[in-house]
Image (cartoon, rainbow, N blue to C red; front, top):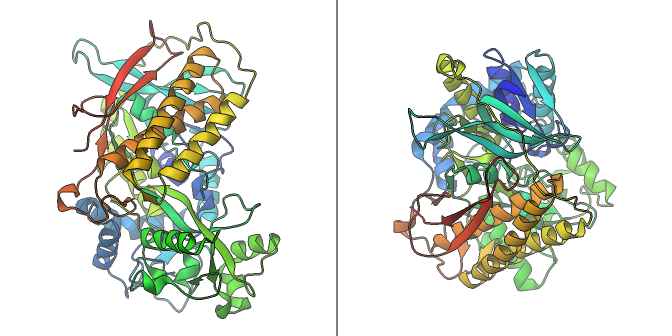
Length: 561
């Protein structure tokens, strides 16, 4: 299978990029499930941008930097914020129907969320992501040069040598893909773009869709890319606490519209933790809720929005109202039980300001990427903004260099070889390890951490990872095996990153080092090669079924920069 652009993932980043590069060449989008099964589709709050004269770019920049706990790259923050208004208007132009407000000079009904100093969040009630996804999918379907392949999943990236001109140097030339018939195909591309979202399914409790298994990050790492800041996992403070709710998020916009966090006795508690109370940043609110639950021995806390009145609640939060009501909770009359849950990966595949990774021919966009925008803690509603800004930047880069890319000759790639692999008839081997990893990560590598628990998690998951790699070599590859292999690797990267940051900063709170340290105000960068500090070592076995003479065993020695 040959194409000019291979895009892995069909959220806001992947679809936006596809629309912008379709005029340059053929585009193939592969997506694990249906095209709308993405984190974008679940986003409730909105997209942050300076759209009103009452707001300023500088205020948005400073809010982002303050939220990022000293790790934001200021140049990237300025780039994203300054491009934000144009990108929001681009979405409106393709048919995204944000809620209007004729009384606001922006023409939009702008919301406010935690960490923001002004109302700057464009929204479509509480189903903004679904509305954006709808408009993008509709526009993609109009394009004759874009193919969307559902129920396909990338296994690993295709890496090829440049040849004698650059001895030892490799570039990405596509990916091995498991199709809907469980056959492995090779997809070659001039540009491969990872837009696979985050890794929330690494944790037992998450707001993410089931597909969020860190696939893009894991594939990029195995290929040799630099991964940055993976210790910074954002736990959304308020997910619905109900046995049948699974991963339903109670948007931060509820607190932005006056919602108050209270304990089981109805007493507000956020004033004990931050002067901004319920509008503090997510890291602060999540730790406050975690502390309240542990101190009081409670299973959850509660969110109170009843004082805003039934008509307002039903109009502003129709999805939340309907979903809660389906579980027997009338939020116009009752408190909403909530708990924190893994929500967003602030780290990811390190990119520059054009979306380029450390591997030639490989881009990364959206939550898969670490651009430097979020630092140690993402500001609410900056994620959709980052996705559309960098999609436009990456497309511009491709357009500017298209003559160079178009001269590349498609490499000769041998087909996938299964060797002596057998059919795995006992899925319990996968399900047991999946559950074990997620429980270890939740219990030992959660909102509040300590070195002892991190080391225990490291030891346990290393053993599980080796077992998974053995299964990967012995059996035919399957969708569940691919995802299990990826969450095991991402778990180890998160733990290694957390152990290297010996301080508390942003989303990373380490009880052994409860204060931030100026000498630690830098990114944590990991790669398969190039780090030479004595310490923890993880054996990585890669491309077990791929076209190599034998299994390659490499040492991964992690080190913070």
